[in-house]
Length: 291
Image (cartoon, rainbow, N blue to C red; front, side, top):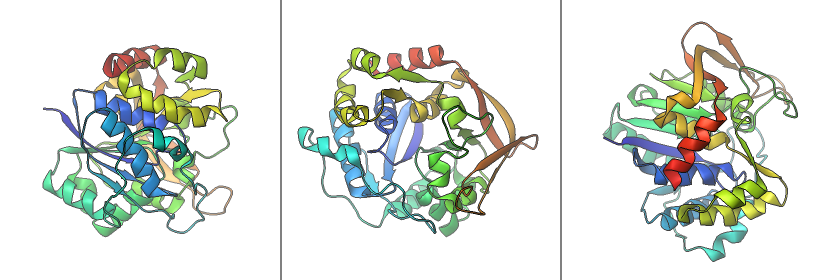
């Protein structure tokens, strides 16, 4: 049976969210049963997700989620890639204010069957777990692109965006009792990288054409793509692309400059953390799926 996936994403800022969605829509072992969006302009983010779903010829329920973090200011107010929406058919009307309830109802309808994949700040998920504390135990697994965990990364500060975008929600989520609680930190995901010229050469599949169009906005500022979110998604279907270790992740909440900083301690198996990646194996798997 295909694996049931709920995707929570801040698609529309970093292009890797769109790449991740294209992969999930192409992966035959994936049953994508819903998408929720988070952070600034969640409706525009839902439209971007809709454009990619339409390009794949698939209808997936899409719910714009929470726009503001629980307590801290919003650092990501705009979905910049929305400027390319007029070139791709997409839905424009979505249920409003229902994302948390949608996830709650869906997970309760399929206990032990759904893997929740989070690739953005964790406001939606923190609220979901707070509103219904039983939900974490009803998940098959929780897989997150989140944190800076096993090693420091040159050029990256002490915090990772998905963790500090809403640090209080991040702390709630890491405290939840999920059977499989997996994190891929930016220290691992940043190792899977492709320059823009190679992206334009290799993104030939039809599902990747809208992604390339949205990527043009990203390439105005960045010279390539780090496959942060797609790597997290791929590990659900091919664990061999990464090596994992067991331990505990703690989240800093004191002080604006460190709130959202993550600390991983090997040992007690509360959380599973990626500690190594095979980029060649990842790309072989990724392109075999999307092509």
